[in-house]
Length: 316
Image (tube, rainbow, N blue to C red; front, side, top):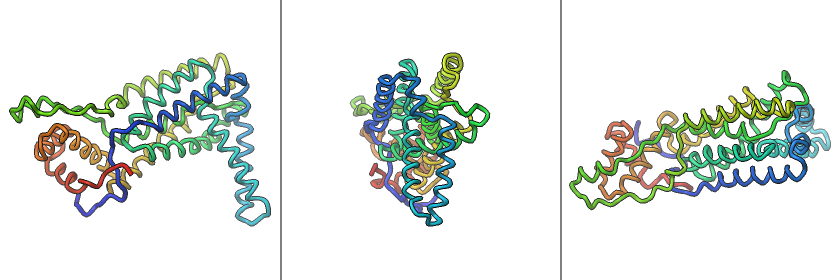
């Protein structure tokens, strides 16, 4: 690692309100209210991803795209119209919920997975990730859906949640700072207490919540298979595609921010932890040592990263 690698954009996790996650929660709740006024299951069948209808629309889009590039009159307008319809169905399908139990579960996991990730990558990049995840998995749904029947209807934020979950695995788990060590090492019982960490309440244990998420989705699959067999909330192939999408997109964002694909996430964590330790009023050298101990990194590597990124890494 050399100092010649400079960030292409400014980037640093900060203590911010997860506005994008709040927006996801609100959208999911609003869509449930809208569907409840029109009869939940019938509204879902009319407005969400019915395989037969969307397969025809998707193949029509492919034909219209070819016609557009060949210069056929009126093809581009029709292509844009059908593309807008496809995007509208994808949006409705992502945020639709069948009943109160499902909407509460969807809202809960959207907040849990979204808020912690948004703290790391910032509001703007989080919204970009969400927008891409709304549309990328659905062609994979069509690819997988042949064996499930043309009348199957997919709905719910499973693919969006898979994208957010995949993105969280870009970052290694964070460790808490032992403030008592800094007090005793300085022999100063009046050392400044750390400021309230706004990010702490948005952090979660990925393994635990991933298991909880799998159990929840498994329960919903079992429930719908008995009550509404035509409704589907899970797809294996599009789910894997969504996981990879989240991981790849956020990896690219981190690379573009730090100039490093291999240790970019760890560098971001080192800079954030260094800044948090400095708030304890312990000085530069002690902050370097504390960051090194917490992350298990050589002090020289931490010092190099801090020197290279100081004053440059901030949300923009």
